[in-house]
Image 1 (cartoon, rainbow, N blue to C red):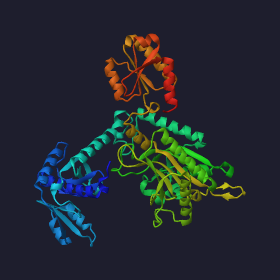
Image 2: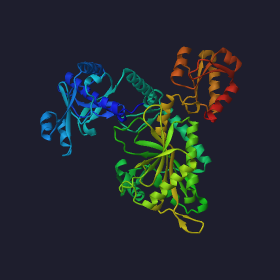
Image 3: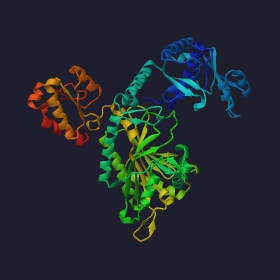
Image 4: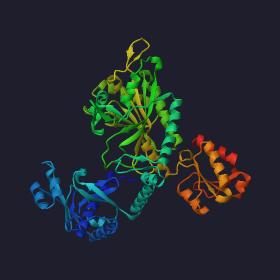
Length: 583
């Protein structure tokens, strides 16, 4: 999907269309006042104070009609520069514009744009005439707090988009419709994956039974891979003392992203935002020799991070998440091999899930930012150069991003392009020379001396939450057999005649760890079949006289019209193969 904000012509067009929207709203609602109307990657919006009037879905076509009427009038869009005094006088009856003017620096050039009977404060640029604004669409509306602060008044935000021609607009609207159909929040609700409730809180999803199955299967999948690679899994508390995060350095560098401190007895705790401090202490629990390293500690850990309420989105951006986390304690000589092993694991997982559209980002520190990043040039240069060396030896393409590192070290982020929307970071691998030093970790090297290990932080799925959101949108909820909450749906043609055989099939499938159910409702076969397809169940069995007498099954794969009849024993082998090979 095109990023309108990054296209100079479309950005100017959409900026101008925001003013067209405001002018039309002013015509229809004379008392309307306007806060800001910026261009965004998806088009534009305008935040509006309509007093007691509430915009509804039915109002958008009415506003569009007025916008088209203004556009046909063809008025020129004229820019004027104003002194501060002139601007304050011009907008004296508009508290929102007065606030904008008062926030401007003294050397700011103040300008406004006039089109017919409407003038708005704006720095521009704009198109020459409203006649250029022909191909637009108002997409949606929502509430938005003034200045994004929940303590302020709730304004009404109207979103729209504008293009140079009808074809581009229609193509874009099709993409938006496709995005709606792929939205994991819609799919998650339809398929019973997760829910949210205000009594629990924003960004705190509740995984429903179907979602719990999906997540457990993902956990089993990655657990088996990590076990084969020598990972040792642990469980650690969801809280830590403030002193723990002061020791790690997170308290100084990450406090704004944590939940507030809570005092219990004489101790001060916070909900943990990450797991590395706990894993440092597990490493420190025993003495280690160089022969023990590398030590790979993994955990499926629930973490809590503060996300602004406006940024929270389904499972994609949450305040409570479960990380597929691990920390590798290595010698300096082992960095290359272990880092390569992590990258190989990432690529192996992506191959299994058919993820092909991704890029590697080497996230580096900003040398001039001494507050965000631990101030040790030698440590940073060593870590960054080591990562470059490893990536170059792997022969993978990557790009560098200054200012995106963790405060303790550089990292490799894997940016994945989903079916819709902007890139997301799924996997990450970070190099850390700092935390082992802060926690005074050591091992006995070959010379019998104490040496500080290096730590590699890595998350293959990132979080199970985000990865599930990604999968739902990539597949439109059509999950592979082994991930589906119900793998086989069994439909008897006649409950009186065929139910016993269906129940025996169900028992046999469950004995082979196949998730299945028998549909015993008194509904027509066609209705049950359609519902099975709507629920995106991989296999549907229809059992009638022939199947019951011959001890066979007649199965239909999701989205296919044809059915296949095979013996029950052969069917068991088929679904076991599908499940065990995770195809």
